[in-house]
Length: 252
Image (cartoon, rainbow, N blue to C red; front, top):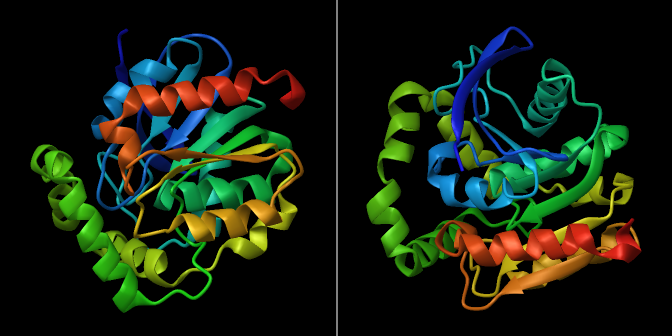
């Protein structure tokens, strides 16, 4: 499966994205701090067996344009809808991981007519009582569990610190303090929460609380022994969960 590297202009900003596959459109939003789109190549390749996968790097990260002013989740959500406009896509399955999950959640609340189904993967902004100290400690623990990924992907955060330092630290701050659960009741799309069973950064108990706020027949998938970035280390398991969710006849 060929993954193409492309550029488009969205809201006046040059946006880098990876493109693969044919079929129903699936907008995949990686986080904007620690991992770039390239670290999800196995995920993208797997999803592209059934979908047309569009994986843009958020402005202020990766090879997309830097931001002159800091953005929050609402600005990123408006930009994500603009990506669909630029590619002439009316509706898409929208999936997001970590900070990208926060963007996807807010996008689904702000632009419900653009989101066919929603997949949130260990999304930030769902802790019942956000505590920066505890989240940082939990992130360190998850990092120890994900050492093979850290060895492979360490250039990603370095790239963002060097080229997008202001946005990098804003996204870290938002991940530590944001409460996005107020957006959940506004989501109309059937939603899958795909979560690592051992995610310490955004624990499963908070995912279950988020699930209770989402539309009926939404569901949760727990990756056994998976931590915060489990989908990168277990791409086939994640892809299988998404395929099953999208094929569920009750979801149609």
